Image 1 (cartoon, rainbow, N blue to C red):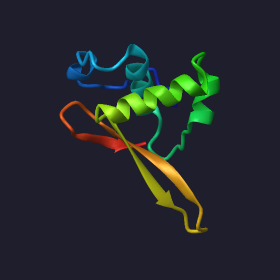
Image 2: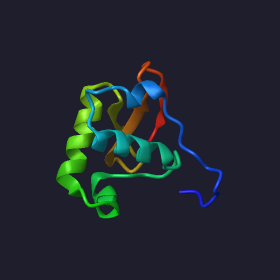
Image 3: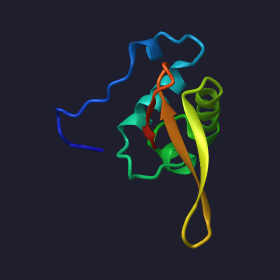
Image 4: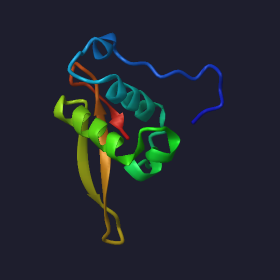
Length: 99
């Protein structure tokens, strides 16, 4: 995360007006958009950052996925291990970026 006071996260207003998603899911998406693209995050790494815990964070991720704001993509590392990447999307379906 940047220490630069001019660093901002921009989200489409339509996202804030989407009443299908909870404030918690909206906050998590906002946070994920603030993470540098090359930084890996997981439920386990997110849980200590806030009070919600792993169960609620997992629920927010499913909620974002259900409504088209997040897609999980399984990737294979050169050593053969697999990991899950989160791709983030706006209300228009435009991909923000892989997270």
